[in-house]
Image (cartoon, rainbow, N blue to C red; front, side, top):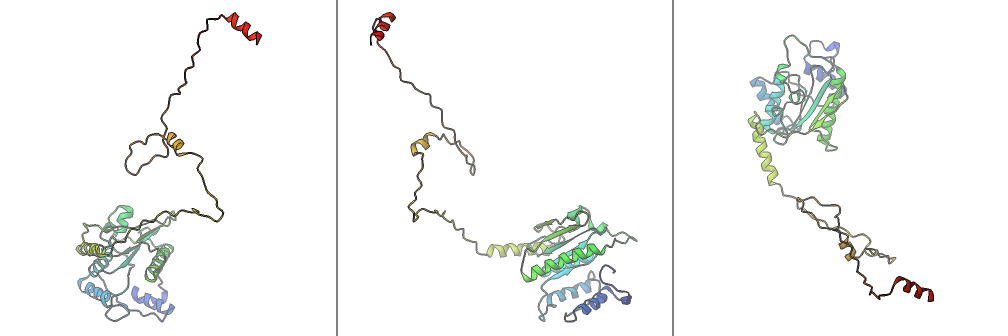
Length: 292
């Protein structure tokens, strides 16, 4: 409890009661509704679903967002099951057992992967999260890691609810390397949760019903075709010269073009010059040149 907000004078209180007292002292104007029970039991699960469906600020309206800050696999799966059945958007968060890494995940039923599609710990470490809890072993507690993950979660909540910035679908935190991996995961069509598969089908229908955007092909704007100075650009190469300097274009797959072509080589042809034989000797010709 030290990593949350537990204070010595709150000894004997449940987690939710201690949380309510601390938060109410920080901001007494906030309305709190506290339930101290195990949501994985059938009776409590039904009440939990009812509060998601009807626990909004307006009586009878669903909540805007569910935040998961639980510390065990079964509770996460219970929240995932309830939100899939109700189509409720929620954010999952967690810190690893060694307390030096964590993550947050936005889950929109049908649109993004639910917790059953790919549990974050399984994605990150390729291990079964169910095997982590060991009898008699307490997970490490590092308040700084908890604080970083909590801050990232709340920042993502604000961006989602107030509609600003980029909302992360998955954002991890590795304290050892100060590494923040981010990704978005599509839902698994073979997810074990039937309500997740149902939400996927409804999302596909919703997308198919949307009007398809028209693709408008813009014409390339000619810059400075006419100008007040009467300047005109004239090519120094004629069309004939340009044609002669280009070669055949090879047959290439669609989408590939050549930057230039090599002109075909032309053999140089020199006109032959013939001289008539006068029959005079070299000495006679040289004598004629001297007399000129």
